[in-house]
Amino acid sequence: MTELAPPSPDAMAVVRAQNLGLTFPTNDGDVIALSDVNLTINKGEFVSFIGPSGCGKTTFLRTIADLEQPTSGTLTVNGTTPSDARLNRAYGYVFQAPALYPWRTIAQNVALPLEIMALTDKAERIARTLELVNLTGFENKYPWQLSGGMQQRASIARALSFDADLLLMDEPFGALDEIVRDHLNSELLKLWARTRKTIAFVTHSIPEAVYLSTKIVVMSPRPGRVTDIIESDLPAERPLDIRETPEFLRLAARVRDGLRAGHSYEE
Amino acid sequence: MSRLQTVLAALAAAVSLVGLVLALLAGDAPLPVLCTLLAGSLTAVRLRFAWSIWADGAVMVLSAVAILMALPAYDSEPLFFWLALVACWAFAWLFVERLSQAIRQRQVSGKIFGLIIPLIFGLALLFIWEVVTRGANVPQVLLPAPSQIWARLIDSVPTLVADFQQTFLKAVLAGYAMGCGAGFIVAIIVDRSPFLKRGLLPIGNFVSALPIIGIAPIMVMWFGFDWQSKAAVVVAMTFFPMLINTVAGLNQSSSIERDLMRTYAAGYSQTLLKLRLPAAAPFIFNALKINSTLALIGAIVAEFFGTPIVGMGFRISTEVGKLNIDLVWAEIAVAAVAGSVFYGVIALIERAVTFWHPSVRGGRA
Image: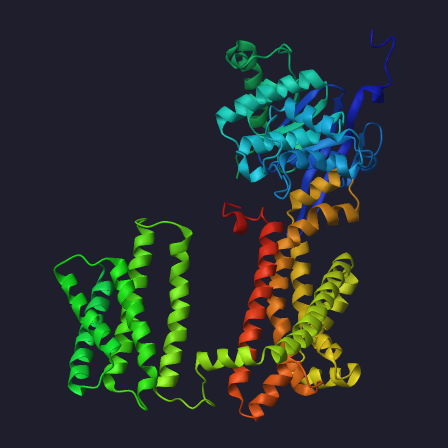
């Protein structure tokens, strides 16, 4: 059927990388952060990037966000260059740390992108996104009055507030404990189901990647490259105990194999 | 009681007892001093019975009053008088020591008790100053007694007010505003342009290294004898601390915070106003606080190099020549109070503006 009525490939592709490479010059010689990455992220997908540190997963996310410049290959975001996409405010970015401004209340922090982009109906957007991340009632608290998990939820609300269709998340739950992380993972899945956003999610936790994703990209270091792309066949509805099912464990095993294959034990 | 408290209590009682014996032998000791020495000796009963903090405080106050009453009685004070002073000081120390221990152990609570300790410290200092200068007949040129300074201050209110207006309200405030403002603006320009950073920062450094007594006469040549030349000296003194602090403060935001602004495609001025300036606020306030005291020093010293016949620095330099040391001290007192209040006001504004900073809210970073 796709043969008959092929949608233009870029119509579905939110992110398309072709032979993408990125080399950092350092004093000890060049470091190849990304090498020959070919990847397409389609609209509405939840794509996880998993791999050991130094595999370039964060660098790839930052390249999509136009925070790093590729040195070879092509990368398009929404069919345009990453720079134009950034200027069009095409994505919301959630960093490893909440990075909430301590002189602003939670509501004011969520309002920050709205002020910069001069968007209207601020109050409605703040209320809606804080409700999405279950932070209603904390509008007037300062970030340092909240726990780490709540701060990270506030930073997700901030990334959602201006309704970008693409959400880039760089190990957002990496610093949180297991219980909070489980909770936020299932919250994130519900949020994704409700908002139908495209999400690119960097993690180094295999269960997290398998639980959340529709597509898992396994990467390996030195040089940073993609070693496996796994389409998940898990149902859309995923309660937390899906992690004990054979399907889940099979996917997790495949991810683990991919990680092992890409890892050299010489060092 | 701690060891220090025991030593202090023993010292206070022993000195009182020796003083009492000497006073009785002298025969002509004033009654209040005799009473207070007796009371001091009697505190030795604390060896057997509990002796409350407040009883120590009462002995301290009684002996201070008695000593002040006895001050004019002699041309040169006898030994028992000085022993009474030492005993009074020991009681004051003991009282403060016991009170601070009680506060630590939460036997007493409330902010008032916390204020008593520095208050007693300040008063004790003034008291000893007063008693030593008057009791030992220290020449007024060397060190006038606080009471003399106070009397002179009350007598010379119109002069002091005129000097304060000239030096503080005109030279200091104008120079402070201009110097801090210029330092702030240049810091933002320098931050924007690496080229200017290399050019302007060394010049700022150079200006700050100029000796104030070198530039003050030149400023008088340029801007005349009135407050404008003093304000110019203050500008030269306050400019550089503001410049380097603001430049350092503007680099305080973390890379994640700046990346965040970049993901919003925020412009330079938006990033400056919404991120970098708020993050720089603790540094900017540091400069404002440093400059609040520098400005007053600069203006007073600058007045040594030519001024109309009014101003705090002018008054100090001329009255020293006339040996009116008490008026000099009165000016110093006015300058100290003005400088402290200025600093305090800036510090209060800082607390309100940088309420979020860990150093203000008392939390983790």
